[in-house]
Amino acid sequence: MRPATCLLIALLALTGMLVLGRCDGTILNEHVLLSAGDASRNYRVTLTSGETISIELNVTGEGLVELHIFNSSDAPLLDEYDIGTTGLHEPWVVPYNGQFEFVIELTSYSIAYDYQPTVDLVLISSGTGGQPSQESQANNSTLIDENITVTSVNFGGIFYGNLTAGDKVSLAISTNGSSVSLAIFNSTLGLLYDRENFTSLNDQWTAPSNDTFTFWVFNYQGTAQVHFTVQKAGGFDVLPVVIVVIVILIVLMGAFLLVRRRQPSIPPPPPSAPPPPP
Image 1 (cartoon, rainbow, N blue to C red):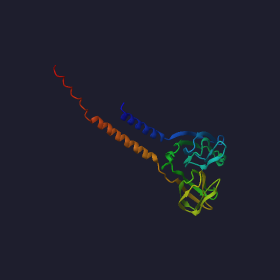
Image 2 (image 1 turned 135 degrees about the vertical axis):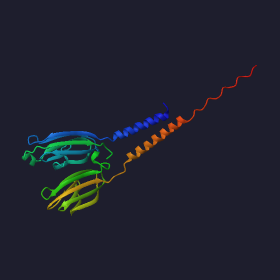
Image 3 (image 1 turned 30 degrees about the vertical axis):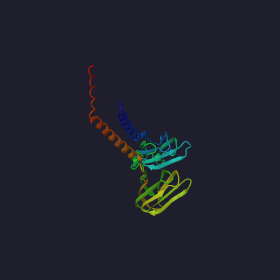
């Protein structure tokens, strides 16, 4: 086989591996019925640091559920409360290598009234390095995208996002109803961002360290329907450039092989003259 042909085959194989490497993989797909007698389910999954997991939780029927993620030492990494028929769809970045426990359970209110909702929990991994999955439109830039009802009684909505030092995030809140407030903090540095009594917010914030940060939307009085999004500023994704370069090389190599085939072959030299007679 000619070297040029071998190179073309290698380039095609490399392109196929890159495309396959981008495919998302479902690591958990559960369909359960919760009730007062069977109010929670636990699922343990081994994950890799930096892996982005798209969490999809859908609830059918009456009743509210909670979702919690723990690590091996039972430290809470994510807590989502009062999930109803609107469901939950958000990415979560694995903070380190290890086994993690995903827990879905009925709220105490739903247990008291013996509600029996059906819950679908799907976890989809988009791998490491490249940023979520069908929920991550711009290199998995969306950390939070939630529609919530905020009152002074329910303490608002509390969400979590894993960020790296220097990550810039865009904060957007739109409300219908009373004004709300936003606080960002973590367990080590305390309060890092505080904006109070607004009905619309578009701002940017930079993460000071590698950590899990808490985003708390709340108000002091009244009721507000809130749409809250947190998105990481888009970075440069080298993969499209690599793919374009490989495609160009394949096209050039194909053209080179085509030209080589169309070139006329060099005719053999004429036979040498016979020796003169003696």
